[in-house]
Image 1 (cartoon, rainbow, N blue to C red):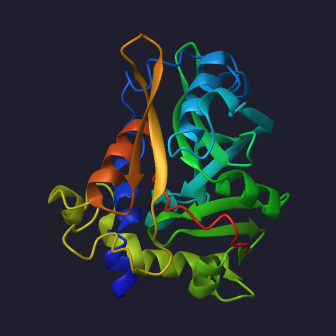
Image 2: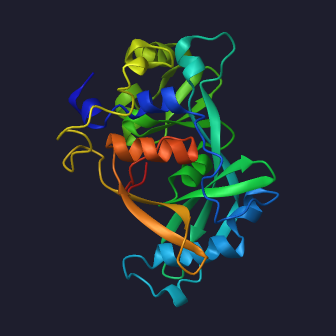
Image 3: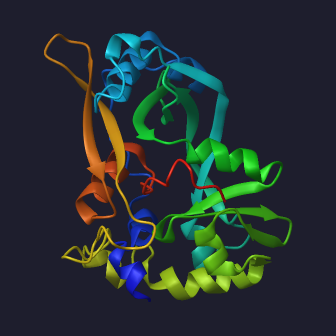
Length: 271
């Protein structure tokens, strides 16, 4: 495993071990809605978005005027069943849905929603709109993310094609076969699946230390993520954190959203 993978804190290892660990009480401040789109555009969500977009003083909260554009998209993450070689397992599985939110000054954010008893609920707000943008780029293919290296792909039949530069570095600009891709992820993550010695040692989520999430690591950089919480006046409050690849941030967000956090990509960078 290369130095960059170690520096990234083995995000996929954390995802493979902890996917599905979604606490029932996360994001209680934003009540469930019948559909992801209704949850994303609910008044409480829009109020939280106003605070989110205003957090660094880029725009006044009263002037943020957030809006949700388009429908939600399924967000797929590399599947542990695929890595384990389970017959018929797809390369990735849906972990949450994402909707694009835009502020009056052009900032973009991704609203992550999960299905709970009674409907859909927003559990995270993250800067940028990678989830939606890559879904659009992938078209009719199956778009998914390999968290450890922050790579986005699209599966089209028996081919896995790259959607960003991280994926190009992993499988080449022309992509690879689905079988060859599985061989690659087995080598990288096959010993880190649920029930493995790696998981039993409790090391999933990264090694920590000075290397984890190092600012100088290629492709690193903070992505602001919030979780719904109650403010002193009883309304939803934005609790923003600089979410890097460090184990603590990764594990916290895995437990909240059942999805591995990705580092923010530059808003000017295109695949």
